[in-house]
Length: 383
Image (cartoon, rainbow, N blue to C red; front, side, top):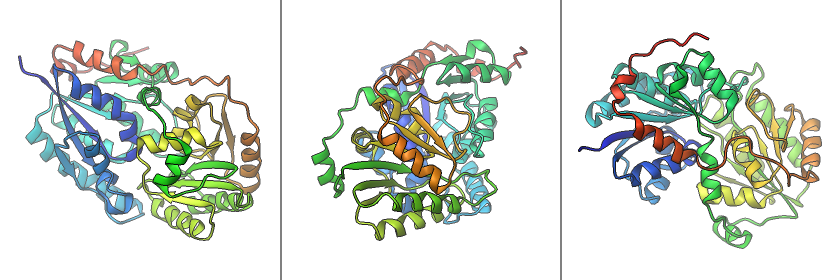
């Protein structure tokens, strides 16, 4: 009996981190054959060539699809999507996967799903049904849902939204977030080892900061970042500031330049292309708070009992733990939120995104499907 060919597409360091336990489970299953495609930021020098981290984890990358242009404009993003469609068309023609597995809501994943949809390759989507009102990821996520055939959502509210979008209940599974699987199975590094590995010095208080473009905001993201940096400047040098760089959305490179300039002028600040999954989680375990507008502050930080300062509306509408402090992208509000985070007790915080068994549930469902092609003809489920 031949193995089912399960193709996973990844385009960013953050998404790969969430996908890792699923990829590992597929690779170790005797009935499944893993096919892996790396694209987007993974293949970019300016974003750290993070495909090398995938290879260091022991995975073979079957196809590398170059799509990123050195452009911060919407036109550059659209052209990147066009390059993605061409690249994925060729890749699928050669690999002939039985099922495509994707996670999230980025534009390169939309291109991967468009090509798979026309190629009659069934799609399994992780993370559908969430809402994030401040970014165009919201519409991309729902579009991917409508092209997908199996839905692995992270919470009950997301389950209801996917069904509301017309997807059949029997094809929607509330499995939790695979990111929690990693947290429960990762031995974090000590502060001393992190300081040596990253060439940094932890201060009395420390913040882990990730800020991405708020793509639907009428105010340019650079203005919001200036407010953030002004707030951080006010904290003084006794607070350590650990930045991870923005993603490749429009304005992402502008944000990175502002952060790099700030770090250059502050001895207590550090910035990294990509920390890698273990280092990133290790830093999160040792800082006093996570801040910015990344989903990791909502998905992962609560499992470490760490407060999150969530800035702006990029994550608005997403399910949030009691440890999340929301504030507007204004200097004074950010400062007030940081002060609150530094004294916040998150001992009783519960992560609303599952119990760390997500990847096992996903693999169980994938293996239970006898004929993936039978999923292709969908019927709209009316409430």
